[in-house]
Length: 186
Image 1 (spheres, rainbow, N blue to C red):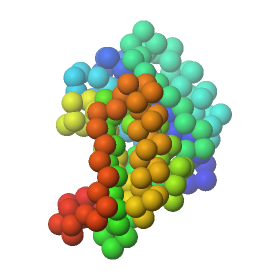
Image 2: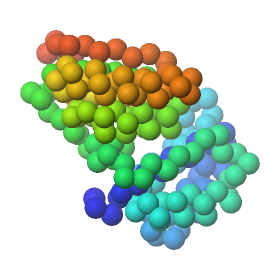
Image 3: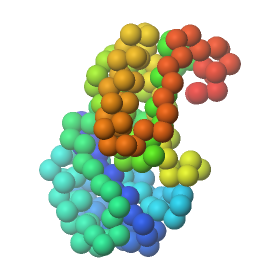
Image 4: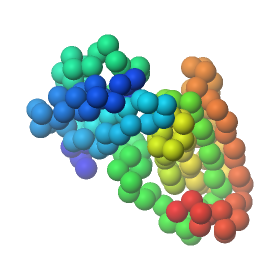
């Protein structure tokens, strides 16, 4: 995964233009398409990764295919590997490693990923889960675990980021989740 140092997310108000954008982005072969899917209400998300320059270039090239339909976009250089794993659906933790948990919910899929990256870079936490728009009304959320101090620090950094841009839905910190809740998260 050394070649995947950056991640880009682009949200469209048109599914057709989102798919065309994804196609334009990956035709150069320098980025990997991580996901390309519709979300509620009638939006479309494209996620690619690769080295920072390639990702920036792919977004620029693909932008020509759908610029009038782009709602939001971001490139996260030096993305935390935990965020990249979560985007790929690769587990970052095991049941026995779950201590305190923090849950952060955002109105925006893109801002959720940015907030998760901030949270993972803030403190020594593990990203348990990250859900982006599918069956969530276009929202996103992530869950981190670690010792209570690290969870509080990382969650509050993400919360402050989301509050500043009015994208915070809610957040919760659970110091000692039950075994039943831990199992439900994996």
